Length: 462
Image (tube, helix red, strand yellow):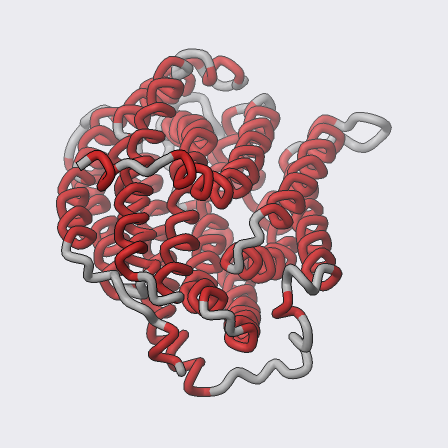
């Protein structure tokens, strides 16, 4: 029984070899995001809330890129496991075309619909906050952030392909350099140090967009300079044509993932909109809590990415029994890690909000939201591991209903009813909405246990 759920030292060394670089990159990125958040938060409640609203909208774009690339990435990992470099090149080209389409769509929607989208989160509550100021700050921030979308897409196309081929260190280093650039220029431009003008939220947006281009430049140059480690870059741009049979395979498996990430992130944005009915101070409190949680969640989220890489490569090589055993142990490991970080997050729940220059109510709400989130971290660790397990085997339709289907069909209706038809305090709303994910845990356990995900996909593409 112990061998079924727990591996030996070599097993955990293998898992951590893949996961730690992703974990470090995610942790440092989220740590810098936390510092960014604190810097903007020190400007005031309106500034921080407006940036939080816009970032929630940009989060939808980011997740669309992630979901779109992940669909082809399922095949990348298995092609690499099967030593098929031309197959890897095809998945890269498909990702590139898809990324361009998503960037154009996002620029059009967010560029022309900024007023309507931001205003949907602004509710008058006579709490001393200015909605007109929040709208102005939000538009200023968004217009500059749009300039970084093409660089973000290119960085993700290259970084995701490198990771799926087992190279996690190079994207990590590029990500680290980007967050350092972001942090330095945030300090300079938000507050106007070293002779630069004090730009506030616009300075934060300039710093973030600049860091996107730094990351893209570093990860692209590394891939093309290290052709032994990234053999798929040889002849990569000889053509951008992707055979129709492969496009069909990638689209069939990948579109549900793209749609899933778009609807799931949209569902998360709708959940914040439900909480925003209670006022800007609730938005500020939720933003503080979410930013801090993202730092801690980087541990089990990175293990989920490791599951898709390790298990995907095993299945691509035809080692289905080993893939199943490995997946079980990685899920258990992820849950234990989730429990460990939950304790740390709970202990710091009263400290972190004090770093922000917001109202006392916003700090109090942030502390309460953080405690609730910490309680549910082991649950979310399991759900994340189950999602990546299902995804690694190409069960993208199943993951669609499992992930965004539950968010849109269960989480959002609960939040909408509670926000519109009750006077329930936002923290209790949050407890009930997050608690409904326990139902999702049962569904995830059944799907993983039944091995519906266990299959070799690249054999289907030959």
